[in-house]
Image 1 (tube, rainbow, N blue to C red):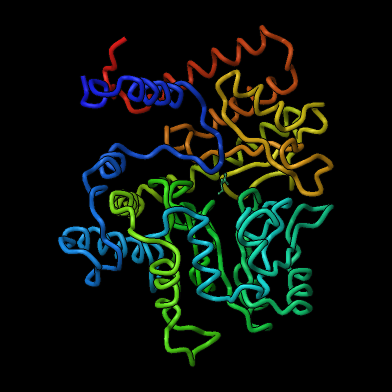
Image 2 (image 1 turned 180 degrees about the vertical axis):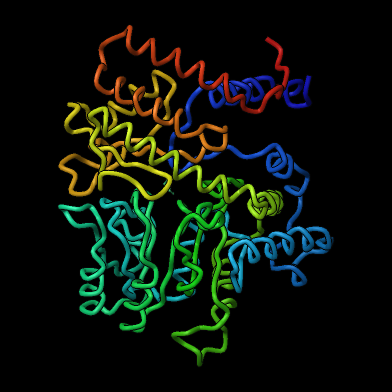
Length: 429
Ligand code: DSN
């Protein structure tokens, strides 16, 4: 029996149930992944006991020599992985990273130009219900109605007209890559900072399977738990020089650090920073490049299979780790599709599609991603089958025999790719 199951069987039982759900289902939420046992060990370590406000070598508490070592390892590995000049390891999550990045470059009320949430952006990219939309003057850009692609000429026109302080490139539901060079040219033309939120595709950048934003952006934020396959958390990367305000006493790296601590956060989560360092070490291994490439090969096999089986995709395919299905023609709403797939053990999420006629809480789309299945070792032949299983499920919502058949296939596939094999808390019945 474990310490946890002995002391708190209710929690250990709930954790065990969740591990089994992850083992026995096909995890296809595009923003989720499955971390290694090494990452989990670092996360569950006594580093959680420590207070270490400040940065390595400059802390507000004593006893931080080993914590400094951990944070420096994480910083140096992350810089090596991405070729970055500066890295701040302390943001607790992506929203905090974006907030700190905005405050390092802009004042409340300044104009920030970012992708419309309804076209694939993120809440922190300017939604009116989020701090970003309340504190900053957000200028949105979107995709074209016919192609579902970002038109860089339109982005340029908006930027020239609005003169934003920051131009943000990044998304949560855009199945294509971004033209960072063009974004940078536009930012240069209007004297704006270029920020990239690479949370969704950071692992693809690390694995050299995606255009590299580090060649062009002033500031890059990312979460660490999506394609990057680390613990739940975030990082802010930046250039050291402040290109836009070289006269300021603080350079850009210092502004970023200050915006995290003391401006926004208190003590960092040292156990999470240790787990980030472990994940970066994994991503530095040459096999991570194969992983990143396979995520995309798998997503493209899934896209083909879905389209061949009558499921419409936004932009008719993918260049990255996700597809965005428009369920309108199936007669289902996104939420119904999500619930139906959940019932056969396939986890996806409802999502707005561009120019959606439905509401955000009940949109027309379904976002489906391949990072977690790729971690489990699924290859393109299996993703082709998964595409057929998803399509059969969506086209036959009331056919119990068909749904049961899909459930059995999910079971066979998960058994062929075991997860966290042998791990149990041995919770008493
Ligand atoms: N919630 C994340 C996603 O699913 O894309 C973004 O923060």
